[in-house]
Image 1: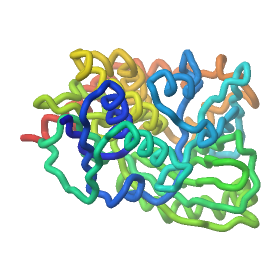
Image 2: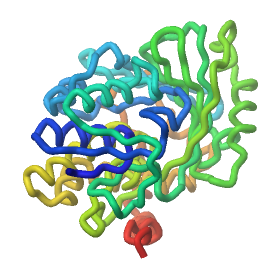
Image 3: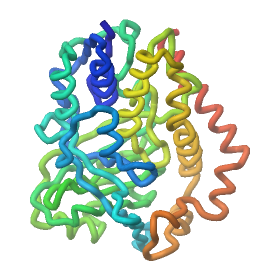
Image 4: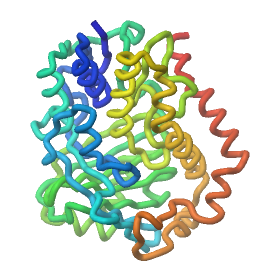
Length: 361
């Protein structure tokens, strides 16, 4: 019996993959049910950098997911602090992202994964607060904290269901960013994320919603359905296997630090952890080969973002509209800074600070 601690995306992904290979799996979670530990909200899963479409990739892993719970995003509009904007659009109709619902609703990704895991024979024990060292695979919420998020879910609005809005502005999200994610035409999440764990994010987000003309116009006629908050951490660990325990998803810090994407890494790391058991392969080799470079590059961008002013953000919005194939996140001097020795030494210090060995010492 393989024990997985945590029934989030990563844990469910691993459980399904192991069960499909004929393994007996028991999943433990301290929450009362799948998706119940966090209020309903929406997440974006990056798709534009994959060789195949995300839905086809998940299908190839054996996941049986209803495509209707994934909403395609074909463009993202980025706003500088001054209000200038740049729209990045997809090529050949391939979505840039997919948005999904998080929570215990029937059309949430959580429930889709849980239902398949249950149908494959995975056993679940909820309301169980397990010792972290008692599992084979660890998929708990962030062990460390260096990212904070706060947001509102609105219903009854009218928006373009295929467009994400992204705002860079230190007045409202110091060392972070703000975003609007749609889930269909009539539901949106407006949230702020910051790497400054000391700032009053709820106050700043509410101020942004009132003062930003784009956002205030969108929510006219709609209503706030709930408010959510959370924290996480990003990392590029030297190893994600400690004492034979495989850390996956949020527990390993598998979050793209520059922009906060983590759902795909959660699903992928869960699958890779199961592959390492089934095929007797080195887990660190598998995840580093699959997305390690992305994590490293993202963490370097994160270290650069901590130094950026609103004037710097203005320089990132260069064109009105651009194809994703031509889009460069960090042009010119910023690219040189990412490669600088200061950023490289910062990465080394980061890995020491968030060394997973510490949790068992």
